[in-house]
Length: 172
Image 1 (tube, helix red, strand yellow):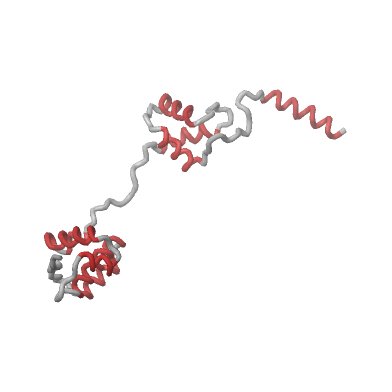
Image 2 (cartoon, helix red, strand yellow; image 1 turned 45 degrees about the vertical axis):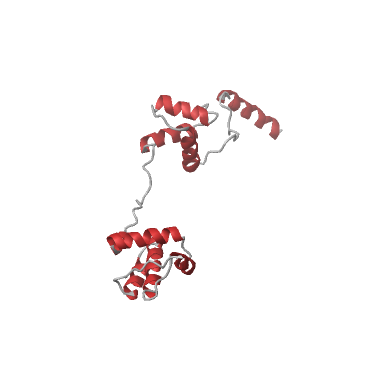
């Protein structure tokens, strides 16, 4: 069995705890590892013991120790993750056009495949099917196989005539 890797931590435990409180969850875990290494600096601590104490995978501990030895504390404080979200595939103008199409009861769109065809022809956008489905569900509350409020081929004049004749029959 090999001896634990001796590491000298330059920062004090108080400094490490202050960084741990201020930082994100990822940074806090890295500082926890450094604090435990600092506590066991005289006798040394193995990656396995450190893993048991902190609850962090030993492979991560090895990587973080190497980072600290190579570049110091600054390398552990920058985690390299980029915050934010991807830019939407559909612009605000295209969003409004899709919204108008979906809210129109006479549009004739019967499913996501027809919507995808419409987007490809009218908006000249090549979007993946699942991207469009999830976008429509998230932004417009669409669902698969939902009955329409009104049939697309229904004659509006016939409906008005029916309402006029049925009201007279009901009241008499």
